[in-house]
Image (spheres, helix red, strand yellow):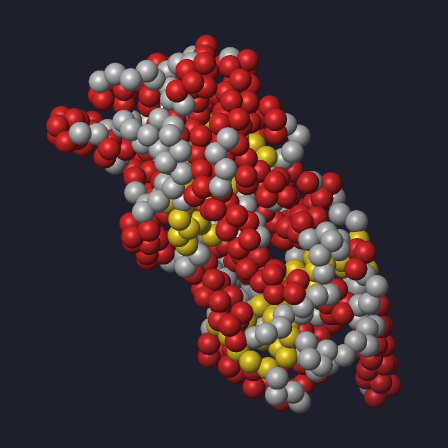
Length: 603
């Protein structure tokens, strides 16, 4: 009996020993070999109160880095700080609250960090979850947290990373990205990567969010080329962590299995550390790593078109746009919607008091503090040039220009042009041309110009423009206002058509549109008796500002309409314009005449 027991124990021991060796061979994987020290460097690790994020933070703190634990739960974050300090024997570990499911929280974190910390050398986008639901901003939970939150955070911190370069952005993805699929129609309609609620649906959406991570890194590397920042995505391995804690029954059932066959958090952190620290991989920026080795990915994970769409998908977090004429009406409604999506919005308006009040309203309603006023009087070419100069000096990006402002009335601009021609067309023409180079640098980008259905009644008399600097011969104020407005809206359509021809192949696309018949303040320059007649009818039968802004937003944000550059839209669909609006010869003449008229007025 004793011999049998000894034999049994020997078999068990050999089995355990062989199992342990196989585990080390098949599961443990390679280790980061970098000996880099990080004294004087600052690191952010998201989701670092548990799992591989916490282990990564410990390793970086041991190397001398100042480590910011960016976590949602304050209590768990502060407990983690104490544990990281104890295990690393470093006092340079601090907690800063960050909820990646709240774009407001992301902006607040970035603002607090940039105020409090002079350096940022390494950003590790580690946080991730596997859970159904919606974020504070109405995004699908896994899309919002795993991708969009990190997307916005990275973009808000890029300038500091570049200033402290060479620096790196490391994003923890997963081998599951190979099974991911991004449905951009679903993103547009549901703001999520899927609509199902089963555990299988959750896994599919998680894989799609990890594909977003890989595509984001691929596109980010292209945009950062020539800067001091490099970026990498990675698969950490199958890890025995808490990512499935929200699926309690399933998670508990498989926990004993994962404990043996999956990596522990120290083993799982090695590829993150390799991408963060390994010398000589700068030439591999944008690549995907696994087991501390660069790996090739499927074509869908390096699809340039999909990468650009993913970077821009519904939130457009990184862009800056001047929204012209945005202190009231559909301009303000457009600016509010874009601010809610995470954009930095520049309200380009003439009246400082009204614009600052509008900026305050938009910041309050959107929860986005990145809404600023810059003075612009489209009736003064001097003001247009001053605005463009100031904008180009203070804003490093321009992704979207919305030419929204419009007036209907009689009189002349500061430069002697008819007011509708000068404001509705010529001011926008000069502004767009002055900003074109920046738009091209930030491509893909767009120019959206608000026209009107009344362009069909318009006409452009080039000899009249040359001689009188106006679109209409002198006549009664009422008839003059209507005719000059219609003619100026035809100028918008022709300008967009010619602009598209000149921008072909640059990455900048442009669109004109009819917003609908909208109740706004466009008629504020009319005589009192005219407003008294029109306003009650407008209130009763016209669209409100929010409804009127939808086609503008469609032209600004809708993916896949790039081949329609130069086209005219109405009700969120491309529409045919009248024969005069399709006259390429007239469009070219108007462009050349506009160039001469604007250049004849110097600053």
